[in-house]
Amino acid sequence: MAVTDGGEDLLLLLQRAARLRGAEPFFCVGGEAISAHGLLVRVESAARALLARGFAPGDRLAIHLHRCIDEVVALLAAAVAGGIAVPIHPKLKDAQVAHVLADCAPWAVVTSATKGALLADQRGLLSGRRVFSVGAHPADPSWEPFDAVAETSERALRPAPEAPAILLYTSGSTGLQKGVIQSQQNLVRGARIVASYLGLTANDHVLALLPFSFDYGLNQLLSSLHAGCRITAADYLGLGELASLLRTVRPTGLAGVPSLWHECARGLSSTAIADSDGSQLRYITNSGGRLGIDDLRVVRSHWPHVQVFAMYGLTEAFRSAFLDPRRIDVRPDSFGKALPGVELLLVDPSTGSVIEGSGEGELVHAGALVALGYWNRPDVTAQRFRPDPRGIAGTVVYSGDIVRRDDEGLLYFVARNDRMLKAQGHRISPDEVAAAIAGCTGVGEVAVFGEDAGALGHRIVVAVSGDPTDHELPQRIMRQCRARLPAYMLPSRVHVMLRLPHTQNGKIDYPTLVRDLACTDEN
Image (tube, rainbow, N blue to C red; front, side, top):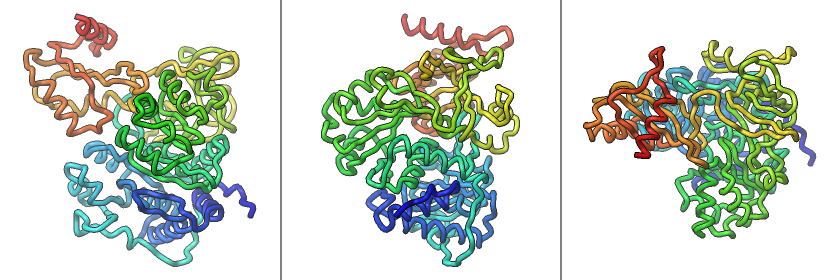
């Protein structure tokens, strides 16, 4: 049976998957599975039930869940009902979760006692909010069971393609996380584009280790819907878990960030991962940072049959570029060229002029997939989402990445033009790390910066003013960080100095600080 494009809203994308896959298993997690048709029925029912309970177009539904079928149902139901899904990153702790909830002001929160066990005070965080609970034994008797949010009416569902569908919270170079607003049509277009160049078909089986709160991870789910292929979601806990998943799931596709491929290369080199564990893989993808060339060589030597797609994207534009896997061995440090329908410009940061041909400048994403802006941040939106520098109609997004383009038009990441860090594929604001340390006994000023850690991205380094003879101070700082921050934000080193260096304007002098600490380490 011929299947049409599927349109440009998430309900049509779900209907497409149901036609392609029918009653066969589509989404699998933790020993449970649901068919594409079953998922469509549950999402439509939940969307109608949300509307019947007062959920209105534009309302936000926050989703703070472990990996489960209900996570996908809630995410898609909010968008199909014409509202906005807000998936909360599973590694965030109380302070970050509280910020997201305060910022997006959700109509309700979908969570579970299982997920809440990882927080210090789940009930306190959700006090005064409407809560739908997944699973038995809710943490609070006032919570409504999510499995009761179901309706069999024929109430019409038709989300507008241009309407906001999801808020993806991401860290910038300063301050706490900001919500990036993605539309229905952007999500569907991104799914279609990525499924096309990956060659996804109904015969594929995608292993999803990235959270759906991460644009890269969300695209895996949506691309699988577009292709009608099977997707298994799991939490990546380490090298042993990765090897076990490869052996049991037997995926044809796997997406990762540089730190995962570094672990994979280490496992292949040590035989913790056998060459045969990847025998079913057809492709792997990398985004969220530059893939280590040494790691790439190891993976290619052990899995020569696997296509490697080096990709680039930013949450503010969902997906941007990929390198043809036939070029990966000759241009291993490139992320390729723009996706179909996307234009990637280089702009001189000092003049604002567009650079033609080869050169180096800030990467600017134009054309398809540009997000709608930041949630409740008109000032920041105006800084990043601007008129096209070529003077033509349309909004573009300035990435903050300095990129080089060669004579072939291939693009290479050079550096950030701001202070944002990246570790294990996560964007991290130094100010958010510093805020977690503030108030620790014995701490004065706090400076946070990154050191190059190869495939892992950055190692986070903290320097504080305090008493250098207080040998317990670094331990107190680390204890406070572990209590307040997810693991990927934790500092790798803490330095205590009598005073931090300053510029003539009274700001922390980061170049001098980094140089001084380097000299201290050498001595």
